[in-house]
Image (cartoon, rainbow, N blue to C red; front, top):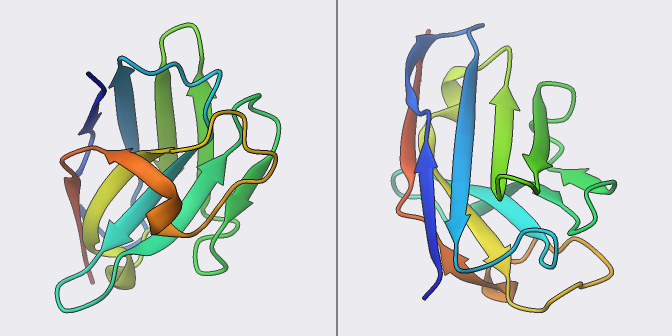
Length: 127
């Protein structure tokens, strides 16, 4: 059984930083791309960042480029999202997810291509 567990969310002032973590059980990050998504109240879930199974390729939403960094530690089967210079519009429930297809050659930004999701961790940014 695959389980993803996120942590690291919280409340910060604008300009602050948070680091989210996602530990995977039952699925190896070295074989699957993984992504971070977020969903704000009343909005659709949106792609934030993704990283390829081999770890070298990363993709970011335009809204977070230059502020967020995705990386992972395959040895610990843990993925991270370092978020700097946070803005109030970053407020959302953040989810990690793994791609349904092993070793997909491109990092997907479409939520329907991901099959396992964590429970989410709340990020709240105040102005």
